[in-house]
Structures are given as structure tokens and as C-alpha cells.
Length: 318
Image 1 (cartoon, rainbow, N blue to C red):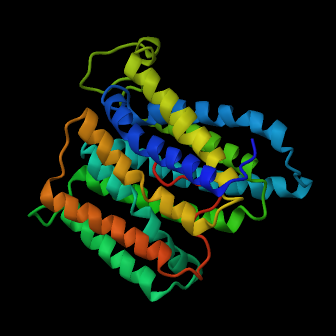
Image 2: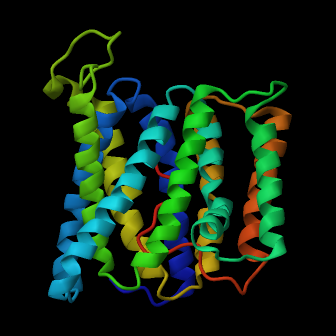
């Protein structure tokens, strides 16, 4: 399927943001039953397998000498995704869905910071202003009257940094390598890293230590696990990567980033609808400041290069 209309592209990207924001609720319920590493191992295996048919339709040309660099890049990007998705998914066990959604969204203004630190990519003053506003918003959203973050918020904040570095490095790789194959390699890498982490952990692989022991077929057959895996793998990962890659052929990168900034809104809406979570006045102020900071950092300097690249995930839980 080829996307030719900018309007259709924006609608498809809004659907991606909806999937990313809404799946927080399902994953929050799933990781209360299935350990994080095992959940991610199954999820990313399904997602990677789902993208394999695209290789036939895309028919990407792969030069023989690019395979070592392609594998190295895929393994590195996969490791960053592994860190990001583990800390995000594990963080959902200790913080609210709304907080997780908004904090994950900080990866958007963090991209120029990491780009400058890693490669000395310079950005405009408006971008730095957006970063400051978003950081203050994070304080209002997560800290309340205290001066400390809870464990879940810190884990999700680590996820935001991992996703930001992943975006920056992807920008260095994607123009020189076949995009679909690079994405499949990194998704399989996340599945392998997660499976190894589950195997090396002293805790049981398919149930939490404090839970009643259960076999892996019985655990994976639970409806909430099945739905969480299917939605997050097929819609929040496989579809999302295809949609972003296809849509960036017809709309500007800064518009893609702007659409993806709506993900936290969907995360909070789903948390309010299904989990009866409420931010409160201070939380709404913080959330508004984070969104305002993201908009300023993305739209304030139109001359800077794209912070989003094809087949790149910003929320992921994804």
C-alpha cells in the first residue's frame, strides 16, 4: 500500500499514536501477570515475524559488504530498544499509566539534547526553551509536593533517554542501510535480549515470584495476555513501523513528530476510561507543559533536521 495523500498520512500516524497510548493499559494489566522480559520476548518475536512479508514486497537491494555493518547496527539499536522497552514496561508496575505515557513522551525533546551530546548537532534556542518547559512539566506531573521520583517514574525516564538515543543513532544508519531489514534485525535482537534476560534471571520466567506457580502455556493462554501481545506486537509495533516509514514519504518530519506528540494524550485518556486514573490540577498543568515543550522543541526551529526517522518508535510500549 502506497500513501499519496498527506491527509491520509496524518490520519494513519494519529492511529499509531492512538495504539501507542492505548496499549499502556493492556500492558499495565499484562505485566502484573507475566514478567516483563518474557512479555517483551514474545511480543517482539511476533512483531519481527509480522514484518517479514514486507521484505518480499519491498525487494530492498542489499550489497554483500553491508551485512556486517547492518548486523552491528541492528544489534546496537535493538539493545537500546531492549533497555527502553524493559524500563518502560517494568516501570508500569510501579507508576501510573498516565505518568508513564507522559514521561515516555519526553524522548521527543530529548532527541536534540542527545544529538548534541553524541554528535555535536546544534539546535536553536526555541528547542532548548522547549526542553526546559518540558522538564518543569515533568516535575509538576510526577513529583507532587515531594522532591523525589518514585521507582516507576525513574524507570520510564530511563526509557525516554534510551528511545532518544535510538532515534539519534537511527538517523545515522537509516540513510545507508535497508530500512525494513534493519528494523526486523533490531526487533529480533530485542526478542533475543529479552529471552536471555528472562533465562538469566533468578526469578521464574512466566510468573512473578510472589504468584502461584503456573506453566507457560496456561499463562500465555490468559485473555489479557493474548490481547496485550496481539495489540502491542501487531498494532503498536509492526503496523506502527510500517505506517511511519510509508507516511514519511509524503509529509515533513517535523509534522510526523508533532503527530506523535499526541501519544501521551491517548495514554491518559485510556487510563481515565479504563483504570479510573486522574491527574489532578497539578498533573494537568505538568502534562500541558510537557506537551507545550514538545511542540516548541519540534516546531520552534524549522531549519533543523528531522528528529524522527522511518521505522522509529517513540512510545511504546509500546
